[in-house]
Structures are given as structure tokens and as C-alpha cells.
Amino acid sequence: MAAAAPRTIALVVQRDLARAITAIENGYASASAAGDTLPPRRESAPAYVVGVTGPPGAGKSTLVDRLIESFRSNGDSVAVIAVDPSSPFTHGAVLGDRVRMQRHSGDHGVFIRSMASRESGGGIAPTTHHAIALASRAGFDVVIVETVGVGQVELEVVGVADVVIVVTVPALGDSVQTIKAGLTEIADLFVVNMADRPGANKTSVDLKHMVRESGKSIPVLQTIARDGTGVGEVMAALTESRGHHHTNAARSVRFDVVREVRDRAVRRALDVLDGSRGRSILERLANREMTRAVAREELLDLALEEVIHAD
Ligand SMILES: Nc1nc2c(ncn2[C@@H]2O[C@H](COP(=O)(O)OP(=O)(O)O)[C@@H](O)[C@H]2O)c(=O)[nH]1
Ligand SMILES: [Mg+2]
Image (cartoon, rainbow, N blue to C red; front, side, top):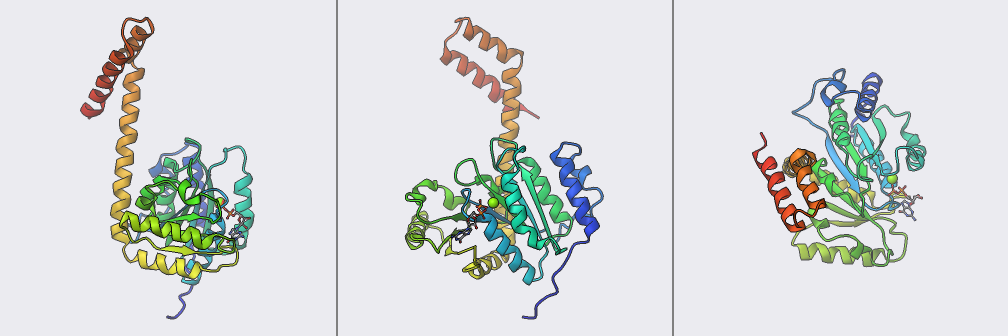
């Protein structure tokens, strides 16, 4: 296959993208207004969104760096959105990533952006969704989202990614036990990184066992992200999955809808609980005019009524 000339994205567009993301992060603009200087949305050819998740220090950023390299050599332009779990005020982790990824800085086909995750100590913030959509709209062929979850992984990455890579490392002792059941629900690919360390084979075998028990067929691959070993196999799996873009899109949208319904329901429930009717029930409980069980039932009725009958 002839090597395609690597695609690039005009710097003015990249600058507009960076500004739009900043505006959204700071709450200065709505999602639609933020991108109004970007090209029109490419519904027919949205970006291929790759989610990379796993515990801190597993080598996600190192792997992402390798993936950038590989996608570039295939000709794809790549945007990376790294969700930084550290506080918005300490940029240590982000700085490390920035230094590491600096070698792409002269390449106009690569856009790298770290975002603070202000909500619940980590994970996918609504701003991340917008940033991905904006990067797609800016014309990037591939958007890689690197996230660390509150626990071991960030389950919600499924809602934004077409394919999810769960990165783990050997010799965490009970590594597989610390990986929660249910991971086979979100992973399209397991990568045991740091395969240069002892225990990689055992971890792979454990993961394969877990996959088999789940009845799924999720590949388990080993990499040494630091020197690039095994990255070719990861790329082959990604290329294979890219062919099923639409199946993945369906799953991603399904998760997204569930998340949105849940968020809206919680917001409405909180509104009613904090409203006058909710407060009066809580006051009566505080004044020992009702039992906990009764207060709970009344509040539940109130909240559910609001959630179900909401417009
Ligand atoms: N031995 C070894 N170290 C690695 C490998 N991949 C990454 N590292 C190192 O592990 C550390 C954490 O990597 P990083 O990519 O920042 O992890 P992240 O927190 O998951 O993004 C860095 O010092 C990397 O150089 C690997 O395959 N083998
Ligand atoms: Mg990282």
C-alpha cells in the first residue's frame, strides 16, 4: 500500500479549535457558539474516536504517543484530548505529557490538548464531549481521548469513543482483581503494557480468562510502549475495529443517551428535593414529626414524580 501523504489541519483552524475548547472550559461559550469559526460539521465523515483508559502510570500517554506516530504514518491527522485527573491548579501531570509529546509540536497534523476534569475527581466531563465534537468538526481524522477514572478506569469513556482500549500493567499483584468486573462491557481491546516487566504473561492469561468467562471476544495484547514493541498489533486491532465504525457508534450513542437521562433525572430530583416541598419534609424529619422511612418514601415519591412527569 502506497504511503499516503500525512494530512494536516491548517494552523488557523487549530487555533480556533484551541480557543473554542478554552471558551467551553471556562464557561464563556455554549458548545455551538464556541465552534462557530470552525468548518461546518462533517456528518458524513466524523472523526474516529479512540478512548484510552486505565490506572495512572500504566503508560497510557506513552502508548498514545506511539499511536500518534502510527496514525501519522498512515496519513491520518490526530487530535489528542487528555483528561487530566489532577486538580485544575496543579498541572504536574499535564506538564509531563506535554514534554513527552513535544516532539509532535512541529507537525501540523497533530493537535494535543489537556483538559482538567473538575467534576467528581476525574473522568469524562461534559466539556470533553464538546472538545471531541469540536476536534472532529475541525477536520481531524482521529481523536484520541486519554482518561483516568476515579477508580481504575473511566467507564464513561464508552459514551464518547468508537473504540475503547483498557491499558493495564503486570505485577500489580492482584491487578486483575483490582480491575472491576464489568470491564469486559467497555473494553474493545485490552493492552497489558510494560511487558518488559515480569508477570506480563500471567496478567494476559488472567485477562483472557476473564474475557472468556464474559462470552466476548476481546483481544488481549502486550506492549512495551516505551520502545514501541507490540504497537503494530494494537494498530492492526484498531484498523479492524475502524471498519465497524457504525456498530461502535450505536453503542457509544446508547451509553451517551443513558448518561444524559441519568444526569437530567438527578438534576430534576435535586431541584425538587431542594425545593419547598422537599425542605418541608426534611424539616418535619428533623423535628421528629416523621420517621426516616416515611421521609424517605415521601421524598422518593416527590422526586420520581418530578422525573417521570418532567416535560
Ligand atoms: N518499563 C516500562 N515503562 C514504561 C512503559 N510505558 C511507559 N513507561 C513509563 O511509565 C511511566 C508512566 O507512563 P505514562 O505514559 O505517563 O502513564 P499514564 O499515567 O498512564 O499516562 C513513564 O515513566 C513511562 O516512561 C513500558 O512499556 N515499560
Ligand atoms: Mg497520562
